[in-house]
Amino acid sequence: MIRGLLTIFILFVSLSLSGQSSCESGFLPKVILSKKYNNHIKWIHSIESRTDVFSDSFKIQHHLIDLSSILSVKTDLYQVFNIGYILRIRSNTVIHRTFQHYNIINEFESSQLAHRFAFEQFFELHIPIYFRGRYRLHYQKPLNGDRIDNREFYFKLGNEYLWDFRSNKLEIRLTPYFGYQVSQKDRIEFGLDYRTVKLNDNNLWFRTTWYISI
Image (tube, rainbow, N blue to C red; front, side):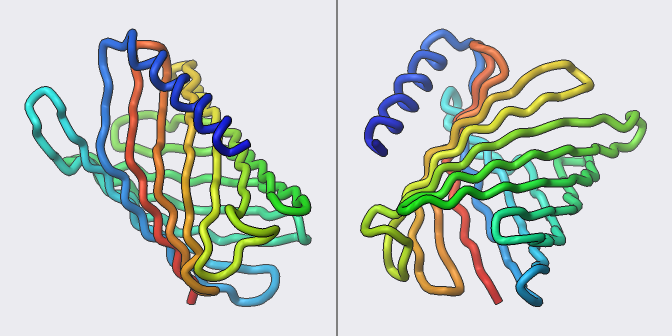
């Protein structure tokens, strides 16, 4: 099943990129630090940077950095609410973002399916506040056995839809990742982050994420 999903993803990206007139690509490294206070409340902080790679001139340029803080409240075993804030620094521009997430998790015998509904508000100097809605679906499965144990790999496939209320445009994202559970306290994920708004506007990023629990 995982091989089939990856094949579909590669074909989809190839068809989209074949007719494009513009494409951004690069690296998206991210570190996520979380602190669990009890069975219901968790505080999450993260830092993420974006580095563009220009294939025509072989130029590498740092583009932006995101700093975020999230309060996560688990209402029961399968539902989580998040509220948070992101500070984006891009060249001489600073963008403030607030957001709210509602997460639903479906557990199966050897896999997990997670839904996330999100609403975001953007605040930028000299620009009226604007909004974005998001829906994300994540499928996760261990590569060995029925659960993810320490020092084992797992596969995660994400599909997300983002609607920008200011431009009235829909962005679609596909994210196939492989993860490695280092220990009970940390894990690492790496893979691709493909984004498209229309057939001639595509972005393809290589993403690495390090999750650390304290």
